[in-house]
Length: 79
Image 1 (tube, rainbow, N blue to C red):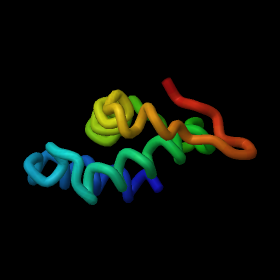
Image 2: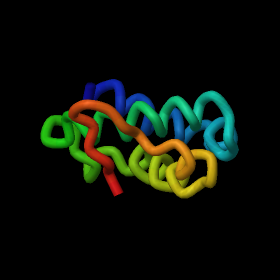
Image 3: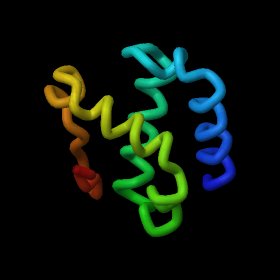
Image 4: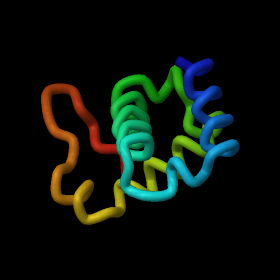
């Protein structure tokens, strides 16, 4: 997982335009990051992956993300 998020970190840095708006890349990255942080934060530390963490934080402030917060058994909201 850490290798995957390290790759995402590089991708966000190399192609910021792909993650700037409300597109597939930014939505997917934000949702996956939030889920991993809600379930495995001790294994995948936000301090080590600043780009996915910042991207997710930015996306989670958008009205559409606020309208549909993560819910379900075991899901802890990361805010």
